[in-house]
Length: 267
Image (tube, rainbow, N blue to C red; front, side, top):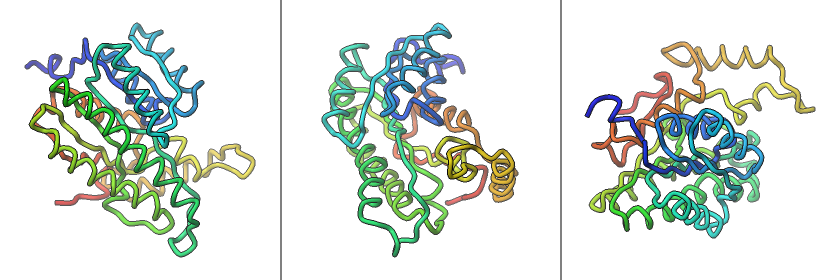
């Protein structure tokens, strides 16, 4: 394959959850730019529509859907809708996720634990299961899950988030083993600190306004933790998603890509 052929997704279809903002939006835009028809899904219907419209304005093909990934029936309907709309499901990107207020484990409420696990772990599980059922039947497909650098570098205050993402990493490996012989690949991305709406909590005031000085201090502080000396942007992760979705990564399954600036370097 040439480089263009390896990354060309023309004629293929993709579902991206969390497509309304941040890494999900970047991934949807890049997959569409590579030629894929994309179903942009998000719990924020307006945001999902905005991403799909951006793709359409650029000459790509996209539709949108509102989805609550904590509802397995909702996720099943989403995948079925993609198959009905596009005729197949070639790429499933389980990117939707949430963060919680910092709290040590001894102070974490049951409600916080359940909410984070429902979105960040169960939601990915439902997406994997629904997509795998379709892909196994068609004998091909790539599932890309969103883990986190938190699986490698423990940090106080984000226990439920880290637990959920560690579960995503193991889910990815287990499913990869189960569906490989049917031509389906399953991989995950574990980003470092990325500038998104989720991380904007570090520079958001109590009234919802943003503090640019705190944002710059956050960029500088987290950037110092990276050998590359900077934090990441959504496209840094979107390109990793595109790689895993494409034939360029045809010999990869059960792997956790770590675009984290070098903060963690596990064997």
